[in-house]
Image (tube, rainbow, N blue to C red; front, side, top):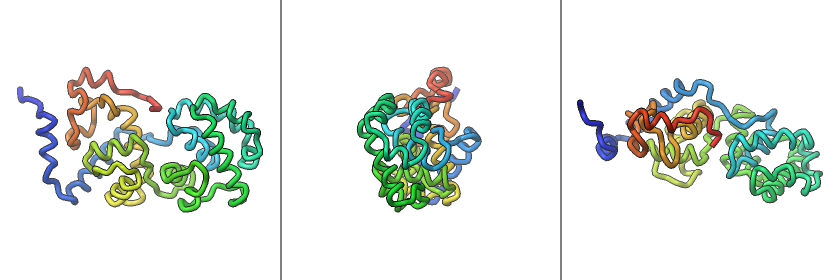
Length: 246
């Protein structure tokens, strides 16, 4: 039986890859992940742009599952930006306590609600340059809202996306804005939003930060980082998560 190539040997296969070759490989990875995760979508529950905006801000440094458990009470009490902007901060903090950093997040969601009320007529703007002016909203959050609430293409570089972009050898950049720029140049805009979902889903389910399930990965043959985690099928299968909300 032939020996499985080492991680170093597999990495060497990609060492002399041309920029065009890298783009072709990246798009092939995306096609495979599209078949692997045909129902990939944003895992935050929301009804409309305002709820998605608030939920995305709340999702920082916690899980989507925890946010989804918390936001129904928040939105029942404060369904509109006007309502949340005028709330008693202590009451909002009490609701948001389970998501962590609840004081800072209360300040952010109340601040962005006041900005929506005062500067945008109570409506979430559909332009990135406007969204990033809101308290607690950066490019990642703005792209989540644009792609999933407005249908405007955007790349969401969260920790999962950045990690996989580097593991796949698409970029060595660590700054999220630079990662976004590099990957955006490799794919047509129409693919950006779904590419983001697929990489995030793959990062949550198989390509974990600490022990990726390399032996269960559908794009293993296209990955320079194969071997970072267990490659034996049985060991890798134990690491696969169907729905981690990580």
